[in-house]
Image (cartoon, rainbow, N blue to C red; front, side, top):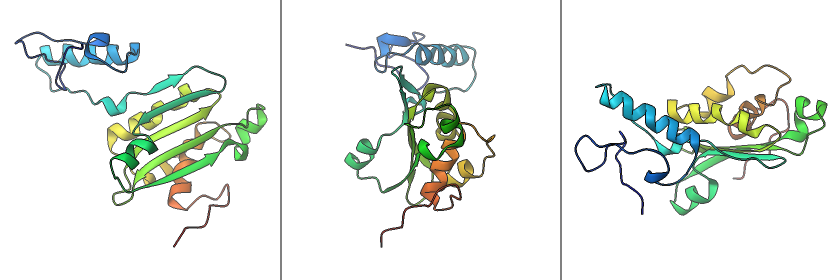
Length: 181
């Protein structure tokens, strides 16, 4: 089994903290490093906490697959009403210029608040792109926050904003799908 901890990496034994693989999934080095920072900050008396939703995950395949936050399947199982924006990389100038147009960026937003709930990216360097979505989840950003963030053009990172624009229905780089009534 795993060692149970709270958001501050404290165990049920006073002054004992646990981080990394011993506290459970996902077993990722970058998660363990972040948990260690949280534990150290708490030990030093700082206010700190850890949210598993902001852990980015990457499958280092070709193309790469990266995700953070909730998945579409999880949101459906939880009965969450959400919007999604899907931007095909075949419409990205950067992906076309590097000959890697097989990707897609998908962002999931709460239907009422518009807050980002999760993101998935499949495409070259997806692992380098997913952290923006983790930050957006951490900061409580909504689809407008992401859509209105200026991204350099042409870049793969702008596909994050384009996915938000697809969800919002404000995209100008691609015809948005018709809204169902």
